[in-house]
Length: 353
Image 1: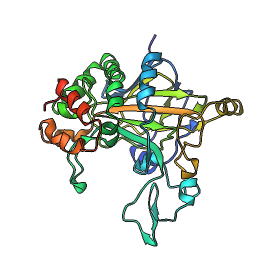
Image 2 (image 1 turned 60 degrees about the vertical axis):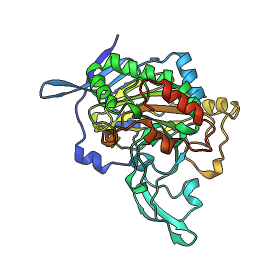
Image 3 (image 1 turned 90 degrees about the horizontal axis):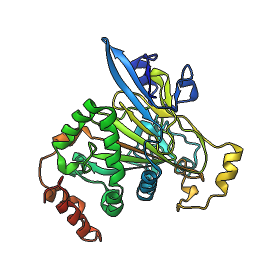
């Protein structure tokens, strides 16, 4: 049975903006509103029900999880570009102790390189990466394109498509009107969407505790679809919406559909008890991580992968051209998967070549 829950805004928009980049804790979950069961979450605006989130336990079966794990577990790479989601700069962590931050402003900082101040400001280093497509990047004079991980690991992208497509079907079943709106939008740039989904991109995070943020740049008329994959044991990592005093315990194979453009969200701390740590220490290493680099969370033996699927807003601004335009920046002569990528694009109805 699906429980229908109504929530009210308990923190003002102004206050939430001032909290951007802050950590969320269990205190932000009010009245035991930690959702770990099938539930639909709404708020009322002018007497109308507005969807905030829908949560389903084990919406992905074990085979789905296995496919997603095999093809996306290595996608999350060290990133210094996650903005406020990476939290306020912590000069005492391993990464920043080896550097000299300067001109630090909350979650953004410059640093000293060869005696000079870096031209670029960066964020805390976390394990996060985008699969699928980027919109154009004007200051780098780059058009819309496949992300580096996608073109470098095209077989994995293709092999993992079935799970992304299933997440799209779950989205359609649970929120058909919002799905239709997003799918129509995605269809206006078919060559820039993940085939047979309403998504252009997915973000893959590993052991990444996000700080308070909204997902600026995503399609404002749609929603994001999130799932989690696990190895080992841990507690916490709840996805929290402090403005409404509610949280979600998204675990292995669960699916959370959420309004993420305007809804402030973050994760609580991911923790190990003594018994959990003892169990995790027995696990074989499957990642080639160097803890001395200081990427947040990668010193842990447990693994929490989150996959968040969404549509980028500005893709509609991109030229409605064929994939020759995309391939020019996607397929390099040195790319061994070039022919496979071309073959896939030619055979897929969502592409023109």
